[in-house]
Length: 441
Image 1 (tube, one colour):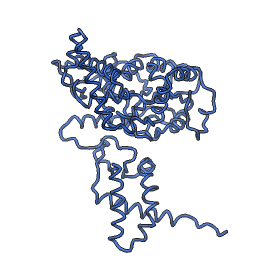
Image 2: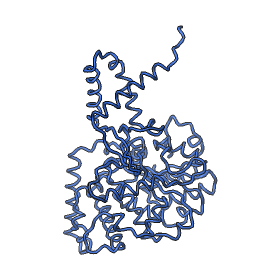
Image 3: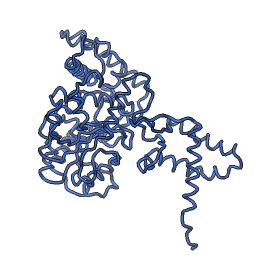
Image 4: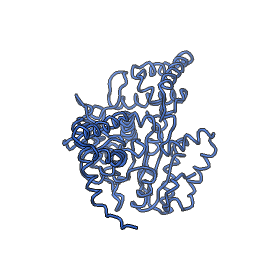
């Protein structure tokens, strides 16, 4: 069941479904109706439960999970399992809430995910020569050796510095085929650690906890390590047991029978609950990025070039630098703005950011008559302050990028935000004056 948007007239919509798409559609159709609906909502970023999440649901979910844990203590004879769940880190409220959100507040599934997550973390910390039984999140500076950091820098796995149109973080597995890829940090344990760290970091974002993570595969060759290596099966294990639900999966590749088969082979390595969320985009790099855009992924920020799909790692290195900064003292910056934040700066990417468009269309354009009708500075300030209050009520921020070559953002002051609004009204006035006057009818 391929679910493109109705207004999409691309080739991806008109073409006949491939064998794997027909297979996944059949798997989806065999699910209970409620699970089908939830799957489709996840793909489209319209998970109703996630959008609402009343406090009562959180409280009931945490209480139910605690009861399941206590029941397990009474019925299990596995001392190692009891020790795992009695670890102080396992009792962390935010960690448990992540597991509940990942499983749409099903306490049985959340407990299973929590146990498997903690077991993986324990395994990875042991491999990192972590001493003692106490669990903690992975850290770049403590848990990754030099060879593993070299592999990270290649950018085969990336958590991207933007969100999709519904506000979810976007991560990806990209075809980085270099000889060094097979020499550095490439054991299964190292690959698991790299992927685990990526999902761990993505799970720090509350919106993504609720709405799920969007994951993109780009595959350029049938001999790619994504197809032939163990990375995809490792990702599949993490998708089922990590701290986040995978909401949608997009697979991009050249449009040849060989590459369609390779894409299908990758998806078949995933658990059914994840693979039914896969959507395929075949064609040139330009064609599949255009197709991705129909699903709300802002492709201008993707690390692949539209010319030939080559992977760039400049933003990824920024992301790694941000993670190192977060592990230091006094970190108070913003890593990834929300979709409806207003971003200050130059360039088309910022100009067409969803929050900036919304500011222009919903506030500047609509309130321009009121602003120009104001007779004095006091009345103009009243219009500006009302806009700022309305934006603050919706938790929308004015952000500016720090001049630190890392890519971090910070929230500007109210007076600076007011100046931004004045500039926006001035730009709107100039745009109005440039419009040609229609001929009288």
